Length: 191
Image (tube, rainbow, N blue to C red; front, side, top):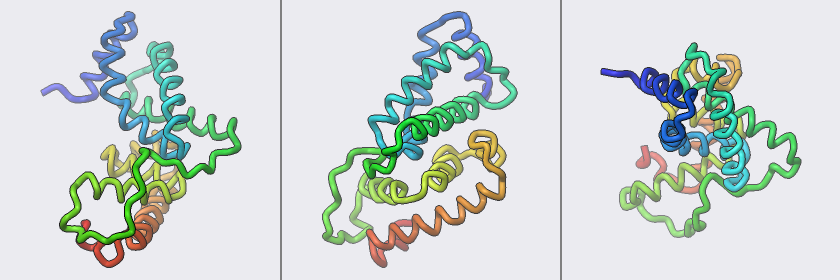
């Protein structure tokens, strides 16, 4: 069975030879997680989409610099995070509360959590992630949504393992508090 790393390596080699179809495959494979990471840092979907365009242009032009020492996803996510933080530095108005996805506001009526569709549960989780500090949201996304081991999160973010552990702990606690505020006692049924 071919591993994800081997598949990505083969695609990268095709990109190095100028294969635009291979590049499209890579973009399609990683665009959603990359957008989510950029949104976690920028808190603005439109800016995150702009950053993502810049990121994929960089990846196409710098494909020859990828050395296959780590997973392609780690290299890509590092570029996404760095480019997003650079955008924050350029734009001092980064405190917008526009989130990862433009959802209609949820009503104040409490629906029993058991009746919530999976899509609605995801909305609550996204809303909660938007309320977290950028580093906490980023680490939670990488660790849980991207299913990265701690060492890989460390490579991607450049954070120490102790900072990652603290951000995971605080992020989980803060996320739970936000979800309790949104869902009340029904939060226990969410998990």
